[in-house]
Length: 447
Image (tube, rainbow, N blue to C red; front, side, top):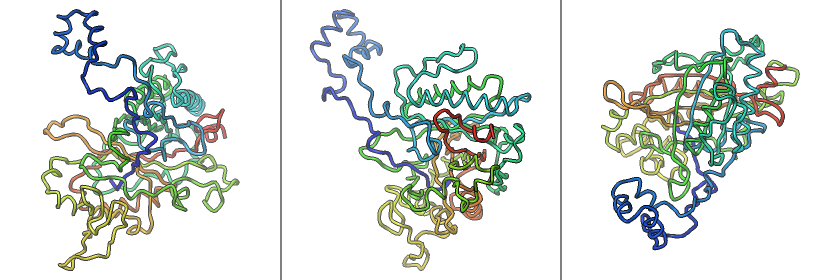
């Protein structure tokens, strides 16, 4: 669970109510008379203390216009799939599918065609009218009236997908199974899968609508293997854009590679040039040009244990101040870690096993990945502890150069390890974005 991502663009913050600054709950005379005329004085008095009437009395006179949160949209088509470098959304669903026993390459292609058509429509704020299933191909209406809310839908292929579709000769070596780590407590039923979908949106109903539509679209071709639901801070919830916090209360995302960095594209996305290892003559991997590899981990946080630590002790475990995310060596959140600085006792200010030190690219031969997680809370476990933590998702052009070396080092001595449990894992090849008129994965499935 390395330092993760989120800087909220000002353009996506809630614009607020443009009609003026009437105090919450205050009634204009016109509204008061109108309400009294409709329900009577007795009904109004009851409403003031009885819930439904109070809501009716204090709601806006006219529906508020969509805020920037609702109107935000992310194009479905492009060089890369959306949902990788897209700013983190407030709500998310991760779902893996296994192809049906009698489904093969033909059925997989038809499924990806349906999924891509639905995703293109929904990310544009249009009804998903092509869904198959018991609803008869009609949109469920769950998200009626909502804008696209920055919805993204990202598709990936697991290692077993290539065997199921007769495409084993086109499976990338980068999809070789991840090594075992001593901190793993993995549940096989919630790991891996033939197909993987990441859904993100800034509105929970929009995200659910996409999830439900894609589940219906699967029809008889595939069944759900596992599903996980997550959340982040809603854009506009802070007075200015800020890096997000995880459920431990830590600022989480400061150390992510920046799109402005010269090597960002090569670090995160599979290049199409010979220098990147994918040449035009290498047809077996050409379909991954512009794509990326996603490592997905369900990491439960032992919050009861973590919250027993004092704030100074938590800061020592992480290597950063809890209040603002700045390194313990001083500065602001974006100040580089001074890994050589020692204190009056001669010991490193940022401890040798501090999470920030161990996961820093400078301490891992430059290994870098783009972390883009969601938090989760799935209720209370039988022992009374919260079933909560991080749906860790990281992106890189090669997991053997990104996730694996960093996780190996964390596995050997991260001070944070006693407070987390890795409970599920998956690795997926996420092809490049579909061109207009294409479906995701077409260059693989029709090659």
